[in-house]
Length: 311
Image (cartoon, rainbow, N blue to C red; front, side, top):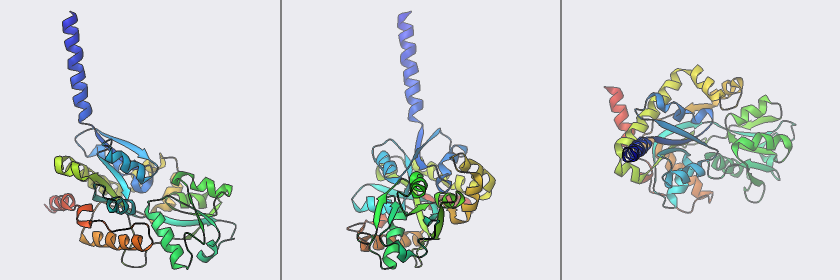
């Protein structure tokens, strides 16, 4: 009897371990513009577990440690990671636009040059950091000498501004719109690049090893990402309803929605814009050297999905 019980326990362990091994793990933020992974399960044949993070660096760390199969990242962080030799690959776009520069509503700051001497909240390694540095530089303000940059998580920026811990912040939606809605913030600018870099923002990241060892797994993930993005683009009410479960009033998300663009497609033009972004990052001394963009971006999965759609 004990023998059969032991065999049963061993079999249960093997089955449980096998099933756990089929689970797909994806990281993202709980924001309207990074929502697609929460819909992967509708389009993926395996169980997809989604883990939420507050910044791209933590997601990337979990990815490299093998705790995630795919995660969101800002393109700036992907470029920074690749420039340091980390084996990361962007396989799909995630979102475009989404940024805004916010100041206190009291009217003390009406122009960007009035940010001199002020404390500005930001998240290092994000597109928002690069946009902030670029905006300051274009207005003859040194990010190192003329302002004080303070690291604040996205989810804490509004509180920090309301309490007076910072004078401004550059963040992704819905936090800029939320600060306006709650009466303590005012959007000073939508600081997108006026040149050919455009409004690119974030993508989906995997490791080079995962592509080499299990390309079909990555193919399924990118396909699920593309289908989830298309579904949400065609069903705005579902998008807004699900995004509201992250803790922001649905009315705020709806007001922020014109500044949010969900995405999945990439092409050579997209990569060229990323190259220009990398050049700006190096000019701003955010990175010391350029990565190999032919290895950082892999279009094979997107091309296959487009071919599938054409047929």
